Length: 213
Image: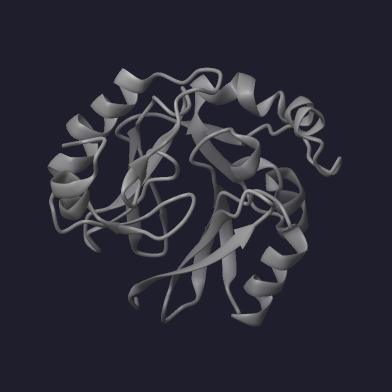
């Protein structure tokens, strides 16, 4: 197997980082958080010759899950995650779209399976541990690859910031616990990608993120 690689496609007016994780050698991979603009995501998959095995969701907000059902049907792959505590969010995506005045092609999402703390998900030889990290959303999960020292943290942690907690189901104290008790102990060297903007390293956030120091 080759190295773990990631390609990021910012989608929708929210500029959400839809991420394609893939093996450099075999080109087998997964799509994380297809929030919308499914045609652009499919074009990137095809242009790079990626064989997508599954779609993974970090949480149930519209900017991360809005295109999930359309992409699932287009690719014929399973839709996995997040934690079941986001079931209500996923079943109300169409209402979210109307509330935000967004594209009416958004559909409610029914995953093929939900994830729980301590599970693993994988493609090829690349294994990711699942951490349930509530606070931004009740059922938010983080995907951690121990071998590559890499985490996909969704909207839990950002470069210089943290996920917002003023949305339904948000809990600031729970979010800080998720970061400090589950993510930062993994090591300062862990590189991460997040749901919006640039990624970073856990050590830099531990030392300088104003929400954590």
